[in-house]
Image (cartoon, rainbow, N blue to C red):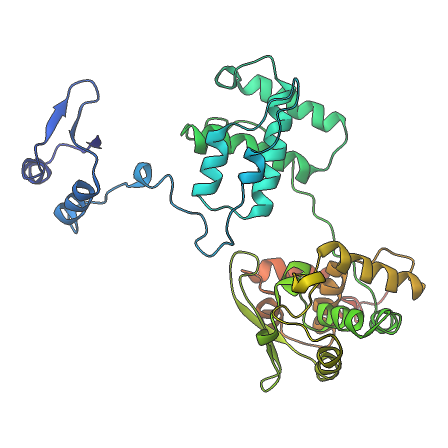
Length: 357
């Protein structure tokens, strides 16, 4: 049924009388009509411009993202039962599927929730309370996992009780660890050039150069298609990046020249960088390319694709680029996320005279 709760008002009462077969519930102290799409539409049209209508309870299966890739939960369903191991409930998988969470989020939520339900395998899920969750989280803390690890575990648990079972703010008083605030790791321009020089072939060289010169995330690089390189406007089109947002970023001249050589030699078909049988290139392969080139270059600190992205932003800031322009190039929702690079940019400190000197 569609329940209609309202403060006493003659206009609203008269409008309700005009709805199809309205009835009154003494138990819930509200008017109600059958829950159909047609009736929802009638309510909207009847009260439009008169009152604010809370539709939240009727939109619980609304997709979180409408541009996500196809959500794949079938492999979770097809897993063979493991003795004495509780698998994720079907309703949990169904809700993730309906809300179209990203596949990476689905894997994270399922793995953490299964860890939780197997920690309390002797208890029914409906019988687990806040104290049981705290015991589980305490166990994680004692294992000395990161704060983000604990927060992911909390999110997976909250998703079940609050989204799957529809218990709003069921565990609102569960304490969350403070989010760690770490400075981005950055390497110098000379070190970046040394990494590029120490790549094995033209394909690897283009991968490293694009990660740095366009400030790309690893997933963004892997999703690039041949048509996303705009050589006339010297731009790289990044589609469906973090937050399902499109953006454009810089394309360097030297990178374009290398990409042309790479294209002639490797002849990719759809994606700019492809693996076997024209499939999308693997994330581990990109990570290994960067790490090996950095090791050959003699760089002691660990260099990852994201370190190259951090270095891109920091070097732009050091060269005087406006922080709002850097924000757009990186695809950050606000300058707050971009401002962290001011803490590692050398021009932040160069005008400060050291008291020892």
